[in-house]
Image 1 (cartoon, rainbow, N blue to C red):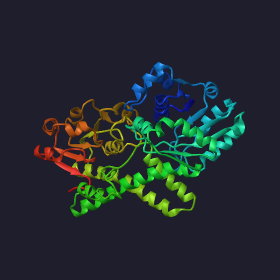
Image 2 (tube, rainbow, N blue to C red):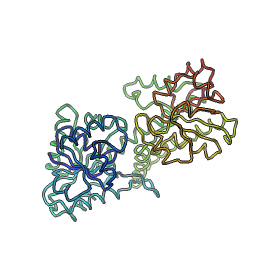
Image 3 (tube, rainbow, N blue to C red):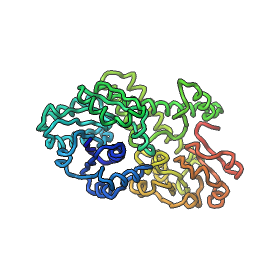
Length: 437
């Protein structure tokens, strides 16, 4: 099939390369000429495992190409995926859909024959219908251009695998023709056993928000239990192991720590709560607002622990921070708990030096006031306290004895429960951990 992917960010570039991988001819479209230039060279402008190899392979074969020309895209594609960003709005808890509608306004006037537009961006319920109305107004082919929705469920660091071998594919369609097109697009994946769930558009739009809201709730639940464990002298990791053996609960997403960040969970949880409130379902809105408050409180708690470890005043103290990315396996620092805590400690007068094996460049662009190091030991040099804020394997493997030789004081706040505790105790370190005494 000949298809386009509008928007070549984390979602769109991965989707375009993956669709080429399963045999389609694909044109990726973006208005950012610098991103398109990088993608045309067969590599990505962000880090995602396996993506560069796939881009290089299919750009070289000619099955995948990139353009800034919407007229070219409209002429080429039978199916057009919308993979643009839908960030949170600055003035309220909702999705900013301006890029979705801007993409449709740029593409629709070039649609002269029957085709299907398939939204992949995370949106509020009702967006499919609004997009269909806009397409009907702008596309020369009129009602022969149908709009469906097919949300992504990608985890950064696993996005290629999640596209090619997902847990499920969900499609919201309003006609048999749109459903047939979706089935044709994903045939190579569903033939391998991946379930395809076909729903009405409204249900489909809610699925992504509900899934992320549930994951947020699970993370905040175990972090609330971490506070109970600290207050009672219990161990939250052992608690999580025990309840995780229950098949109804499961162990995944029950790692207590500083909480979630990134470009999806915080935004989606808040937007889902806001939409529930608009619909008059305040019980759901109240639940998710509590989840968000618990998550925000984890960062407050780590700052409190750090200040206490500094003797009650962080001013003039040297703080080493290991980790800047919001999670392992990515260079993404959007809403990073690690950088939030580092910036707060800097604002309290501490001299903060950050190291991350992948995200230093992006971190510096967001928080240039912080210090940065190119090695873990360099970031720890002279530190009065050290914080592990992203659970990179490098930090678990590092020799505590070597770290002891460069710090000013052997105090570690392990905000991700990421280190092997006995090794650090043997090296005479004082450890502070969330959910453990």
